[in-house]
Length: 312
Image 1 (cartoon, rainbow, N blue to C red):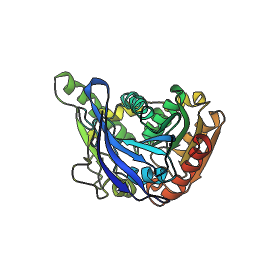
Image 2 (cartoon, rainbow, N blue to C red; image 1 turned 90 degrees about the vertical axis):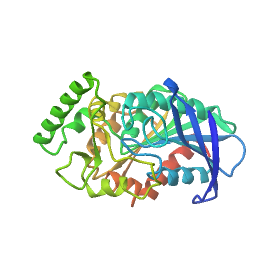
Image 3 (tube, rainbow, N blue to C red; image 1 turned 180 degrees about the vertical axis):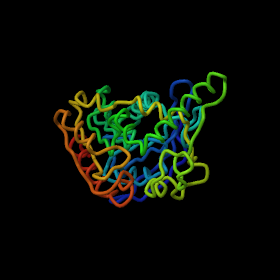
Image 4 (cartoon, rainbow, N blue to C red; image 1 turned 180 degrees about the horizontal axis):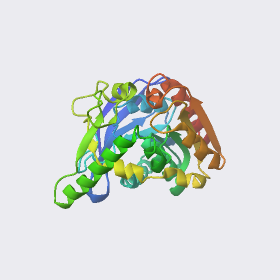
């Protein structure tokens, strides 16, 4: 476990300090991320953040981390194994249950840091990681507050929203061929994450997704591909099944009312099954607006929830 360089990051209220960190995960893999420390001294509550899908911490989590740290929280942001700065092979391979297991290691690292109150830890996840936040909230009693933003609720139901039966069939055929190829010892097949060309197989073709993923990032921070088998893993992932067990942790769900990636109706139905304490926040726009035009509203809602249930 290693601490690296330190950077001063401006926040909305006061300056925070950002430090590069490494966390040893299972299999000798090093997860890398940022630790934000607030200007406030003494024992502080802490929040751990992560993106879902194929995003990396540079896709806006620096802004959110600084925002929360400026409000008095210690904040940890990490890249999932195989993505961004974190180690792990095969690269760009999204296994939700592996990511959840790694996130538990991240929580263990965070609660052991000087100045962190191990009894006041929260988790924030967006997209697929919003689903991870629900699973973690239901299965890890170290967590007191959960924010699931535009969360994946049901991979099985999300699969039904495939644009056309032809696309669904093409994906199934490609997955079957990928299984055969891996059996022969070949590496997992890959596909683009975003593409403006409809003739190129990609996870997303929307302008919003393209603008989000292809924003200007540091060289080498992100690659526009993901393993094809990541789609199968997502289809089999059902984080909504855990939502009733999040209690006694406090659950906030932030939903985009025009989300074309993770259906808002699934999120609302799952939220209805959750126990108190809970709060549903619905914002206008699509999935990626949470990191754009609706960022401040989403961030303020999360901050209010963490203040209410972690202090700060």
